[in-house]
Length: 365
Ligand code: IPM
Ligand code: MG
Image (cartoon, rainbow, N blue to C red; front, side, top):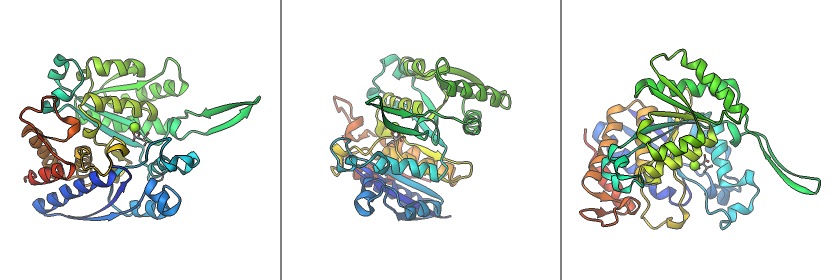
């Protein structure tokens, strides 16, 4: 197979972690007989520096022309980086949101899986970590508060800021269908998360999930409130299979899920639309504090590359090969600093590029 992939290394640790994922994909190509062609484009702060805007039309076109997009991370430190002196619509994050919207990527998958080897990195009670968990979050990505009308104005001499949480029937219906489809392929349990005791948008969300559930009688649908879900995730994450929620709740809960899975550096993500096209990125940020130090964890990006193979190219064996290589590396005691045990007993600390080498070396047909 010949595959065209557009890469967006971005800012901070982005270039370092994308480099390792490209390394691993090239090794997969060698072992399985595929050719991956990569074209790099700018987005985020680096694009502001080069072109004055976080996202150019050319970058959007180059993403559209590829079969999939592999991204690192964007942005800097709010309050410290000069990018944040710009108005909000010109900042790095605005580029990412516009890209998601322009590419129609409404469905964001964030799998949080506790590797048995990382039980010690899990902050939960030992008995809970011992049981393990494997949760697939389905986050709506192109609606809600992120994309509703917003303004800041002066009313009666006082500053007022307004963000709008808006959801249309079709937006909820299409993400609900995706969530049920995914639940059918997994444990057939779907938890829809909302705030239906307060918000109208959540009441519509709940109603449409109930309607869509009629087409999936095998899937057990449960409704849960977002605050209670945040609590249940730390109390007993093993109770969840697929969790579907709106954009903002998904942003918050997915960071929580990453932490209980050991580290944000372990959590990959896929942003999809109806066809096979997708954008793949680690769920974590650009970690400006450690940028350029070669100590970031590249595994979330490498696992995002595995999702790219699985969801955009239907290359299941190849995706398994990456995920197995990650498991083997962890089982053999290789760690980046973020997932190191305190005592470091029997473990080997690797730099970013060494972890990439290790995973590439462990790719097997
Ligand atoms: C994420 C990030 C983004 C989001 C930011 C960088 C705009 O936190 O992908 O979770 O809020 O969606
Ligand atoms: Mg986030």
